[in-house]
Length: 242
Length: 218
Image (cartoon, rainbow over the protein chains, first blue to last red):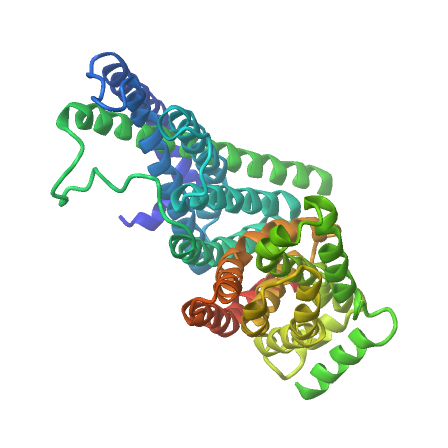
């Protein structure tokens, strides 16, 4: 029994078929619990008032926006090294999900920034880095859409994902050099001295779990759709040949 | 490899090669900016470093799709891929030829265009140095983008979407060096970082570009 057995599309489909509804329901429960708890049963912050509650959407979405790209990077590497089609399709499936999380993070950040910083948008390193991440997602998906041959598309997008990851990291540090930050630093780290209070932290953790599960559910669902689409193409091609 | 470099240079310089187009485009961008923001010399002098770098970057972008597209159309790219020199070397030489025909002229012309935008006197040296150090990165990153999109019918627009985000660190450090020069602050830190990006891009990206070319030639 090895992990690579799941690279077989048939095995992957059989294993994920019962998993998708379970993960989806768990994601829904966690999201509902985290958001309801966060929105209605936590106190207002003494300086930010009720705007602090956007944290339950903003932080998990931002975390998953980056993690989705990291997952695409791993999947692309697996495709380039071991040529497992499921891996390439999973990377393709994750891109729109990651892009949507990036958009959620940018939009909720703007909504929070307007009352708190007095502007919808600031050229802060973190904000700008997210805008650039959004552009990377756009380019990645556009390249997938532009190439007809599925294997070439998988190869080229994987190479782009690898190079893009390196440049995304460089850009992140170049931006720190470029402008001073307005965005607050990390306040959820396990090892930090001063962190966000437990009152806000506990519902936030539930909400983060919900976003992780939502991402897994959506990616599984979309990967299954991609595999089915690939099978349909194969069937159609066979019919034309006959 | 020398023969390939000479061939690419000749093709670029002789009629129809597009040599000089990048320079003309750069000039037009620099000319249009005062129409957009007004002829206030103080304002122009403040935004000149950014405009000059942005203009050079866009001018560079303009000629990127020529790096491989023409060779693919007439089949010489297939011959180059089966030639005894490694494909990584072909990519590096073609990026070098692109730099010699766009990056270098842009670098040499930029101080003249800086006069048009009333660039601060202290910035000319840093602008030229920065462009000299930064444009190789633009050419190599562009060659990678061109290799990714060479198989596409209308790859030009996609090419800019893919390449421009990759240009961001180069632009940040390059414009920062010029701005620091204009303000009279030491500009060696951004210049060193700019050189680092160029060296890194020149060392690694030919491999990625060659991998992409192999996929496209399959």
